[in-house]
Image 1: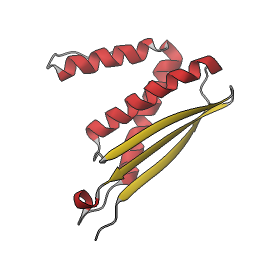
Image 2: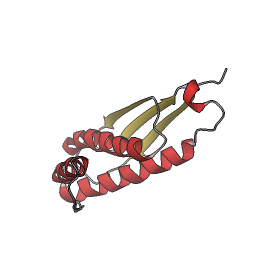
Image 3: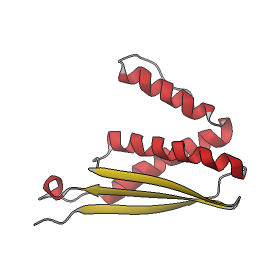
Length: 124
């Protein structure tokens, strides 16, 4: 029987933000994970948590598991999943540092338009 494929990742961030703004990283991390799930070999379960440690750093934890029946006979590319997630996360953290939560709101509106078949590009 094939074992479950899993990934557990911890990302330590030192964002150029005041401590009170660290709470905004949670929806950014969730957004990056959602975008990763849309384009990568999506796992059967995924979780994301954010823990702020004073004004010094933030730890972002991500876990993903692929069910054995889906991975039978093939290899899950954890590196590709991780790289895709980190690229999305880097994009959203940079937008947040530059524009605040308004950047995330603009991303949500753009995703909503694309989900409903509208054309256009989000400015980030």
